[in-house]
Amino acid sequence: MNSTAPESKGPVELSNLFGMRDKVVFIPGGYGGIGEAIATAMALAGAKVTVAGRSAEKAQRLRAAMNDRGLAADVAAMDARSVASIRNAVRDVADRHGRIDVLVNCVGIQREEPMLEVTEDAWDEVSNANLKAAMFLAQAVAREQVAAGNGGRQVHLLSVRSRLGLRDRGYSAYCSTKGGLVMLVRQHAMELAPERITVNGVAPTFVHTEMIRHVMENRDFHDRLLDRIPLGRIADPADVVGPVMFFCSNASGFVTGQILYVDGGITASQ
Image 1 (tube, rainbow, N blue to C red):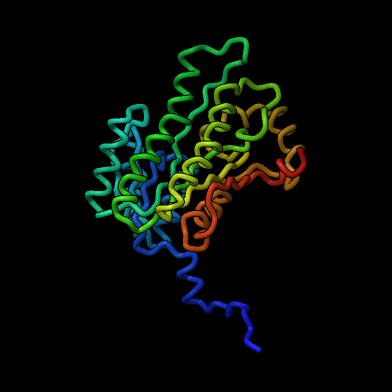
Image 2 (tube, helix red, strand yellow; image 1 turned 120 degrees about the vertical axis):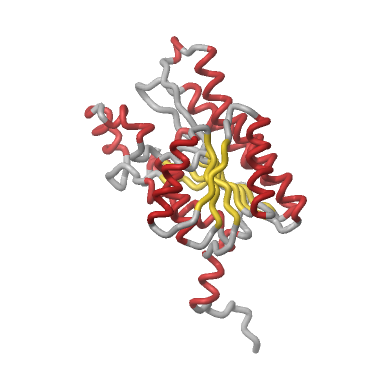
């Protein structure tokens, strides 16, 4: 009787399953705390990494730091507020490397305002960065991936706030745009599935980065947050790297339209 059970994989097969060697990876927003950790991990795994963003100084600083570790990285100028700039940056990366295998969208901002005081300017700024930029980054990269005909991966960084509101903070714009991004991921996954392009999201809870430093300095809020996280700590950027790498690698070839919550158990208990 023939067995249909798959054979166990050896070191070479497992390396191919989770490895990123020679993959062309585009990381807009890649010089933030989470983006930097992802860019470094991708380069360590053998990927050809390009970090893009509005601040040339921050991008160059990250490239220098990676070069000091013997890791290669490119940078691309890009203003996520401009669709033309997004398209130019994507075209530049594709022209430079011949293709784009992976998009990891780390672009995102928060402008905290109580609901009764939300301004149109702040709302538009958050919406443009968190949702509009995601749409047109995904579109620009997908056009390159479809034209190349080799499939691909797209991963968006979201937040646990795509699923849960936050007490005692002014998070209307942030929560709603991250929630909208969930549906953007699912819709793009459906439209790009025939092209063998997977689209997924990674949604952490609060992560120790400069973006949330002002929140973490509020001791009362910090302690109440810890009380709500079953694993009992705030996430580090390194905690986000593994889930992102999974979605970018061959290991996730049959996974699309999914959101992985990296939250220490919060969404399992709320």
